[in-house]
Amino acid sequence: MAVILQNSTSAILTKISDELSGLPNQYIDFYKKTNGIIFTDSDEFSFYLTEIDDEISLEALFQIDAKNVNFDLLAMQREIGDDLPNVFWIIGGDAGGNFYLLHRHTQQIWYWDRTCLYGCDRLTEREIGQYYAMKMSFYELLTLIFQQIEKCKIIIKNK
Image 1 (cartoon, rainbow, N blue to C red):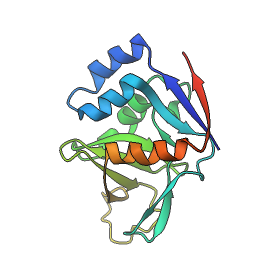
Image 2: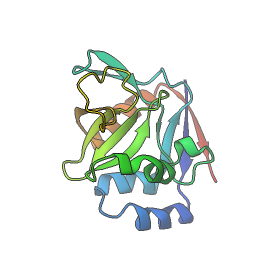
Image 3: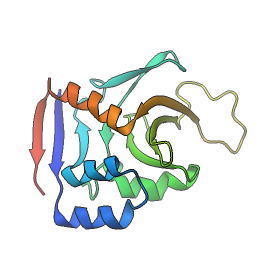
């Protein structure tokens, strides 16, 4: 498995201060150091989620100004963010169109099963997917990711 890390640039840092205000400092600091993380093999990094009794994969913590719009943090927030309660911010995704969310107030990570991969039989017509609390903070998520990254080939890209 390879991991793509991209260094932040001054343009990215400007966008961070403009677009990410009001989000937890740990999250903003992450983007000041590393402009997202992309796993080249989305099945290699996963979490076991007890609520669904299955593993969920992580393909990316989205980038700012990503070449691929599907990995662009701000584009995804603009495109899909209106479907979410205001307390959530989209931070990443899996390969199947589901998302990882950061709760603005509790700083906890949530998984949004937007495509109903794990069943949405209890939803009303207006609801989109299911939300699952992962019972970890952004810092804890990063710790797990970087423990896994130590075993990976790392590709660092400078813009």
